[in-house]
Image 1: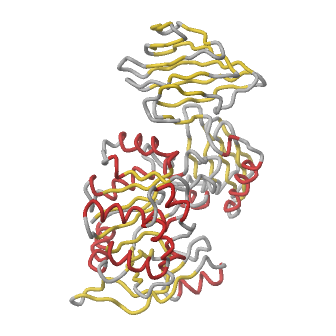
Image 2 (image 1 turned 90 degrees about the vertical axis):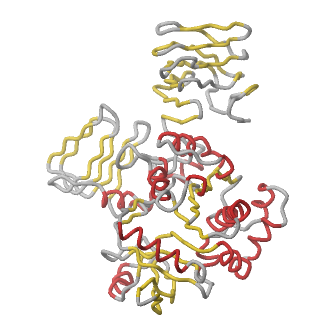
Image 3 (image 1 turned 60 degrees about the horizontal axis):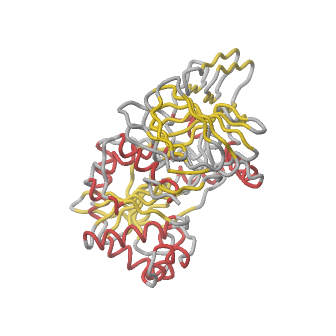
Length: 465
């Protein structure tokens, strides 16, 4: 079976933990692995690395590659499909399916969102085996057996049983239901409905037939275009659910009785984290984080610093150093309104954390003021920044750890810990780590404009503009 991983989207619902350039699939929620890495490992249960395709935003290209490198998985370069613009799930899946047919011919395919938390095991593997048996005749979705009424998920009404040799494989789908209110959700659970997981399995030929029948404009956009940019410009923005699954007469649902969460809100994160005796779910992020609670219960607290709570309950407290969110549990679906407000204000905290990841490493903003900004640059062994120039700022680099090879104008320097150099505005410069240990540099920027878009690149190892 081939696997398509959907790794696009924006970090709107879990701000400030996720950001536009660090959506939730790349955030370490529970341990040292991202949700994307966990999804890749699930995909390897049924697919070889050469059979796994990732559809992602072009801005996430290096985040995907870094996550794969960390878990020592190498995908063929042409298996990473970079969308020029997000158009929801149906165009992304159509593009991946066309690529699979081009590379392997007609195939059976599993489609997995990369931002879900799922328990694997015998039940998980059996469900996918059942789906593979159905994939030639049905577009299969996976239904999660609800453990309670939930208003944040869509529901699936199962219909006629589908059996093979007396073995139940799944059900025909009678109806897809939108996210309900609480009373309706209770009725759905009592009537045996399933949560819609957003995972699918099908044969490529059947899928393309149903797309041509129910959403022909999507398929036409790819078949009539000479480039992926043109295809995405023509394609409508539409989900696989609205475009195909709710219209086809060949939809089936396979029950998936495992622990599952789409982690679509802080309430969902609270549910999956371990709680202390007072019902508090506390996650410490960073070496200086700590929580002291007095008469505090049933809170979700994720913090990078000492955080004390007194006499509070049922709160979500998310501290990322550059932003603080305080909300009542049950109200966290509205967090995306904060993101929208920041976007309208052109506030970069909607887009990036204090720590931003780059193909050469990362940088963390330590302090900033009216005309200055201080960063810690971390450059991986053998990597180098682009040969670049800034119009509006000068920079001062001090090496803290490792060895730095530096170009400033027509000079080439080798700097060791404690040594420094100054780069005036308008001068070409480059930073490189020629060593075998991580290079750390403190960068002080001074100027009238310190935005990340004040960069003119002349040479870049990673093909950036």
